[in-house]
Length: 212
Ligand SMILES: CC(C)(COP(=O)(O)OP(=O)(O)OC[C@H]1O[C@@H](n2cnc3c(N)ncnc32)[C@H](O)[C@@H]1OP(=O)(O)O)[C@@H](O)C(=O)NCCC(=O)NCCS
Image 1 (tube, rainbow, N blue to C red):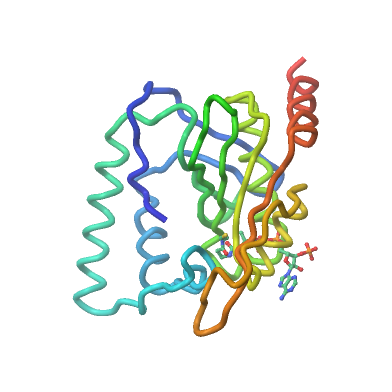
Image 2: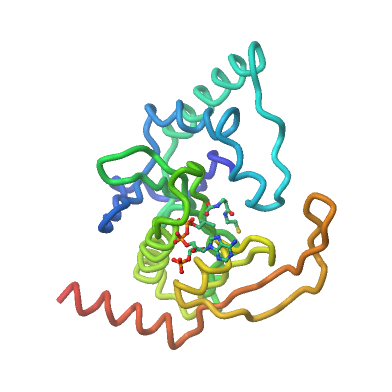
């Protein structure tokens, strides 16, 4: 999960997408501590995220160096213009800590199709519906910004939380890549999910209704 996701693009006002329990927002300098934590001590999420093999936790001098590197990287990232729509927004628990991020990749403007991802890096917050809320907020935001016809996501069959999260968002399996992923010595299927045009149109209608 990179944080240097800046592109050529217009400088825009801060983006903030509020839900009931989480908010999606732009990065801030004070996010450094959480970002370092997710690369050093709180790293269980990396075993489930793509490609499911995180590095070992850092300690001592390596940790100090990592902290300095992330601080500089985030500061540099924040100093640049942000693209519109964003490539990534941070997920924060309302009244609580930073939890992770949502992202988008492989946007095809002609077909109006986009791929999305989500990572709740704070494992104590898993299985409480927060990843699903964050992903739904993100999809609604992108549908509104990009007039999409289709949204896609992907995971591997051993990631039961992500499979269920995708289902709860309305995704259906579009393609199964049998045995395409090896995770910690076991073979799993790669799963491509699609939120089809009808489902996307419904989400767009909801937005029009809430805006009028
Ligand atoms: C995947 C992830 C985003 C989901 O977010 P979350 O907040 O944990 O998800 P939710 O609580 O909304 O939904 C999780 C669902 O999985 C279910 N679940 C958990 N463990 C399960 C298991 N072993 N088998 C089947 N279902 C399981 C939960 O019961 C819940 O479903 P329910 O609401 O119907 O009860 C989050 O767990 C995460 O970031 N994990 C690490 C990084 C990652 O895997 N990212 C996705 C990369 S593709």
